[in-house]
Structures are given as structure tokens and as C-alpha cells.
Length: 279
Image (tube, helix red, strand yellow):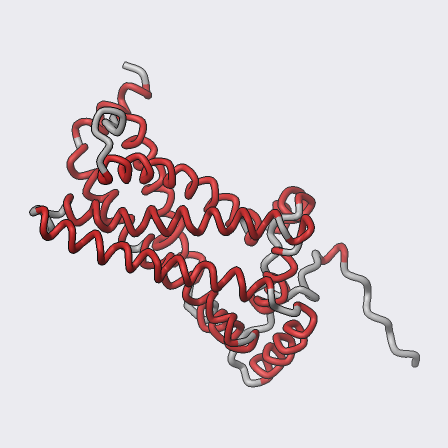
């Protein structure tokens, strides 16, 4: 028996449990994180200082890399892998029965594929996937990736979105965010059926209205984030961020970390030696 057939056999033996875990992971923690992430980004509308303060709060979480992998990246990878398997093995009857629910089933699969491409590109674009110096220097940064600096959050984000004439990335993010929004909102409706929360036509109609309103709200937060980034003056924002960083370091609220700053994000071998004072 090949490894591929063994994997398929494992999926088929545990299909019920895997589908339930896939459904649950799409809501918590992946869906919940997406909501928090978009609302946090939308806070940039209130100004660079508000957004930077929120980012400082996030980066004050103990063992942040472990938390990210346990509650964000790991569940996303699991949800994406199982989602592709479900999409490849499932069959749509949209050609035979052109009802709204059937179309939504097809849109769910399509937006899932778009979401996978968007999320992996988004993480590479802003964070570079991995934080090792050799990877950032040799792979990510030469490709124009890994551009986000947590301690210069608004300014580095605005600069990153203005690459390629300031048009390509905003369009890419708009399509990606809206695809993720639909996938989550419709996924909530599907999860409700999977978990037996709404099974009658009346309860399903009510759930459809709720999910539609929820999708509009989250989609609006995503669009607000893009508008905020595109209207941010990166130079003015950087002045505010540097001052906030200085105050927090002096107050022992954050530890100095050059890798999280635009000015300090240079590898040791690239940094210019500081001038030595004359004796």
C-alpha cells in the first residue's frame, strides 16, 4: 500500500471526526482570529497611534510565536489541507439544480481556494513566513517580502501596500479579504447545519440573514482597513510610532527589538559602524 493510499484510507476511516474538526477550526480559532485581525487593522482609521498601541498590545503576549503557531498558523494549515481534500472529493450539483444553496456550495469552494492563495501570499508579503535572519536576507527581502515592522506598524504597512504603483497590492488584498469574508460567513451557515443548529427551512432562512449581516460587517471592516492604509501618511506615522516606541522602552513597557522596527531592521553585517568620539 502506498503512502498516498494510506493517507486516503486514514481520511475515510476518520472522515466524520475530521470533518467536524475542519468545521470547528474554521470558526474557532481561524474565523475568530480573522475577525479580530480585521477589526484591529480597521482601528488605523482612528490614527497611527491607536493602531500602534493595539499592535504593542498584541506583541506583549508571552510566547507569541508559540501562540501564533498553536492558534493561528497550525489551525489555518489544517483547515486549508482538509478543505482542499473536501473540495476535491465533493461533487456539486449546481448544473442540475440551480438553487441559491447549491451556488453557495460552489462559491464556498472557489473562495476557499482564493483564501488559501491570499493568506499564504499575505503572510509572505508582510511577515516573510519565517523570522530567521538568513531566510529574510537571502529569500524574503530580496523579493520585496517581509515588509511589516510591528513597532512601525502603520508606516511599514502603508509602504508595503504602495509597492507596484500602489494599485496591485490593494486590489489583491480587496479580492482576498472579500473572498475570506464570504468563506467565513457562508461557513458559519454550513457549520450550523453540520452541528445541527438549524435544520428546518425557517431556521435556515434566519441563519442566512444573520450570516449575510455578519459578512457585510466583517467585509466592511476589511474595506475600512484598506482605506485606512491607503490614506496613511507613512512619514508622519513613523514619527508618531518612533516616539511611542521610545516612551515604552524608557518606561520598560517593551523590550528594545531592532527587528521589529524599520530603522533597526538591518542585519548586523549590514549595519554601519557608529562613529567613535575623538579622544
